[in-house]
Length: 181
Picture 1 (cartoon, rainbow, N blue to C red):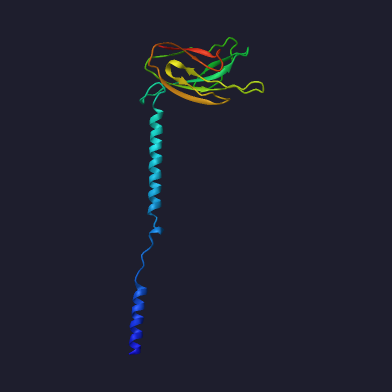
Picture 2 (picture 1 turned 180 degrees about the vertical axis):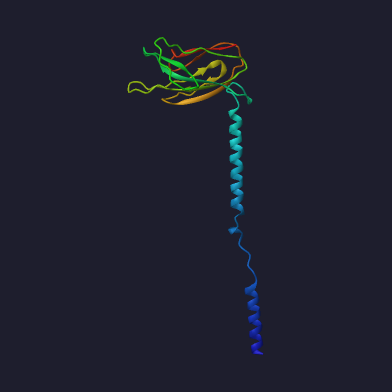
């Protein structure tokens, strides 16, 4: 009878060893995948919000889905040392400074969506730091102060007719005329 007890206990031990153990939940990858999925959804939502916001002109509170009229304006200096704005062709090329340069008159039609691209093209000197901005008060167009080779694009809706002044608040002599028909 002693051998029978041993063989029974051996069989029971073997049964206990052969039962499969379940994996602990902490080693499962599901929580990590869930966090990655949530992160992707947040990134997509933030990107969609940014795209939506980019269609809203600075003087409106809703998006406008039109192709804007693009205007590239650079800061310039005349040969006699006066600051001014220079209208640059979007086709490229350079424009020579003019001795009696005045900032260009911009003409556009009412209802146009306008995207103004401003670039500070003046190099800093040891005696003067070249910082400029661009403003059209009636259309809520206000650029930040732009350092050398800094640029900014501002989109607005030409929703009023008339003549409006655009200007640099840092250099009062830098101003021009915007005419909307």
